[in-house]
Amino acid sequence: MKIKVATYLGLLFYLSIVASISVVSDFDLWVTIILFFGLPSIWLLWLLRPPVSLFLPVAISALATTLLFESIAYSSGLWYELSDFQVRMFGVFPLEIFFWNFATQLLIIAVHEYFSDDRLINEVRINWKNIWLLGFLVLLAVIGVLFVTTMSRVVLPFAAWWLLAGAVVSLGGAMIFSHTSSRAVIKKAGLTTLLMLPILLIHELVSLFSFHWVFANPAQYLASINIAGELYPVERFLFILLIPLWIIVVYESYLDDSA
Image (cartoon, rainbow, N blue to C red; front, side, top):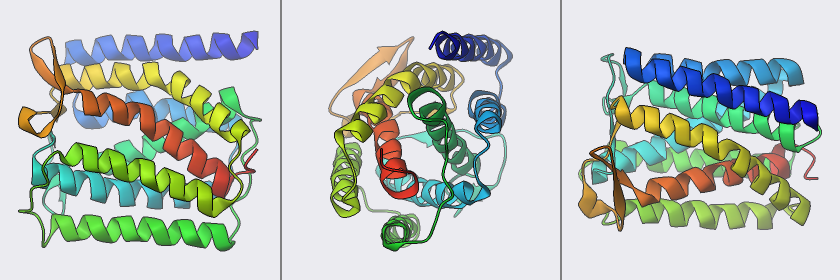
């Protein structure tokens, strides 16, 4: 336990140093993603030695959720990302966001396995649960593509709350269809969420001060706060709480041992 605590505190210390340097040096989005999520996830996964089969479902999940969230965010004016590069997915949002999502999901799983679970990542096998999960992710991707192409002018009032509600409903559906989610899974997912919270909040502050994310439409949010002169929606904080919980419950119920 002492080793785990020391390792976690060391990770937070590293991220705090990176945060300070990032803001002072005005690192772009790519560099920030690599330093905050890429390197820590590579380090923890190197210690865990996961099977190669883990990366494909995480990549599919990252692609599907990026397409859905970013397309609705841009069409409804929830947030915008600033990039130093011209390459954008569907000509709308930066390509870096997919890699941010992918690296973030890998880091959440790595933190979960290393600090909250048994440090054993099982080989991903094809079964009915994985097929159901794949179908659900494909559906999310299709909806995202529709929004980013044919429905790009559709504005959803309070779209952030619709996304939050959808995430909560899909989490409940995932637990019901898996037939394996237990209190132990929820408890460990909650612990992982608490461990990820400082990491995600540090990154949010860096992104806000470095203008990687811009929240420019307060009318779309029910509540927001002012941080050093920058708008920050409360709904965004709720996403930070929900995303690790969602990822770990789905990971345990469909890709791991559900225990």
